[in-house]
Length: 186
Ligand SMILES: [Zn+2]
Image (cartoon, rainbow, N blue to C red; front, side):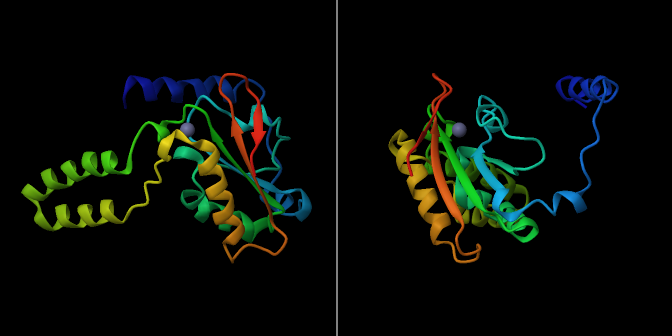
């Protein structure tokens, strides 16, 4: 194990011995009223933490962190939570200076395409399969660094998605890393 990972695992020894509070069992969590469970889709970027900037109460709101906070990438998790709770709403959070505004789909395809080609030299079948996977992946770059447009697009995607319960509310926020404030944009 790398030193960086080992130190994290070691941290847990301290954490668990410092008054760990056991959360309620899933059977109880499942009984939370439907009109209270709102899922948060946010970016995996460690500079923002919805638990903190939305002051989320404990155990109530599932948080799905994916690169850029892109809705399509979060869909599988959202449907699992919809199954368990019947979601009342979804909040999509994108943020300023997001890593997905500093990369393009083409650049991601180039990076992993090169690796697929290298794999293909030793194992053509594997290389071909990996290339197909890369080509079919929805990388979802945020074009023009416009996180307001990307939030609006993801909110529309979720509002139009037909498998959620009727009446699901979807709201889009942009979190400003400089001020700590969110702006509701949709
Ligand atoms: Zn981000």
